[in-house]
Structure formats: structure tokens, C-alpha cells
Image (cartoon, rainbow, N blue to C red; front, side, top):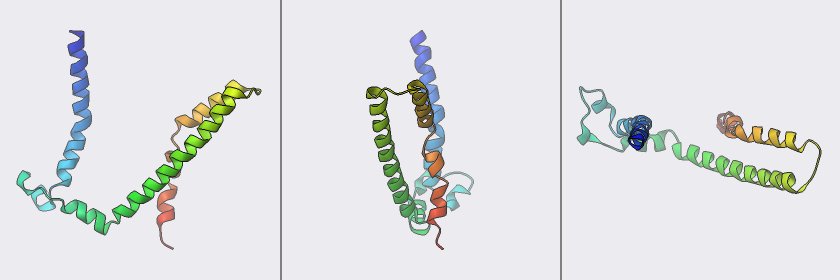
Length: 126
């Protein structure tokens, strides 16, 4: 009985999480005319919204910018973390536990939290 309740809660949680994603996908695949009608006509699925997003909004450029920044941030984080791990394991220094706690605290705050606001400002043309 415990296993049933556990799996039931897992399936229920999955449905709660996935339902908005499925709704967003369905809404993105229908055009505005069929969306504002009385009901949704599922035979009118189209990719026109995606073509408009890529052509008019320069979405591909934004995606490439995000990819470049993400790759750079992950590589920098791996480098800094590897060097810090080496120092914490093999080098003895004063207040090692305190510095380790500070380092872990900085890892808990995502670096994208600080880098995201700079992206729109740097992509504006002068």
C-alpha cells in the first residue's frame, strides 16, 4: 500500500509539472485565429509561430548568444572549482573550513543570476 501511495504521488506530481508545458506546446502550435475562436481546432496545427519567432524576433541570434555565454560560464566554473578543490585537498592553510564554507555558499548562488542582466544591455545597438 505504501508503494502505491508513493507512486501515485509521483505520477500526480509529474502531471502537475508537465501539464503547463503541454498546454504551452499546444498553444504555440495553433494560429491566433483558431485560438480566439470558440474552441481549439486540433486539425489546424501549424509551425507558423515558430517561423515568425525565428525570422522577426531574431531568435536564433539570442539562442546562439545564450549558448556561448553558458559554455563560457560552465568552463570557467569547472576551472575555478577544480583549482579550489586541489587547494582544499592538498594545501594546508589557516581557516580552511571557513573558506570552504564561503566557496560552497558561492556555488549555491547560480552565476547566471549575475550574468543575465548584462545580456540585454550588451546586445543593444548604439
